[in-house]
Image (tube, rainbow, N blue to C red):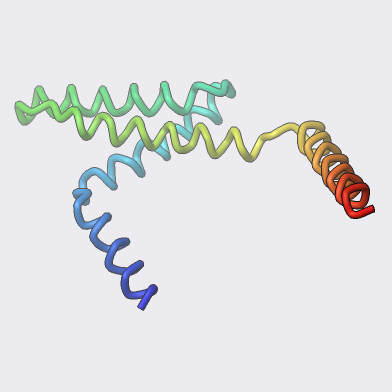
Length: 119
């Protein structure tokens, strides 16, 4: 029963987002990744996705007479998603090691305090 409810919720959530917005999100993710590879700065995925999205919407305004803010937002959100993905992947190794050390130390402290309480 849980799987049926999950599937329905998943399906309904994506059915409310237009297919065009998903394409804009994917284009923003692609342009964000390309911008990161070219400029090598942390904020470049967001900036490049916004720039590409804005240029596309200006083109749509000139050609078709319609500037869609939601399309620009979807494209920019694709760049934001890539920004956070790159940020998580490129976490410094020292930070990962330090986090592991801190977690181990805290775990030992909890064990120690439990022993003291039980005595």
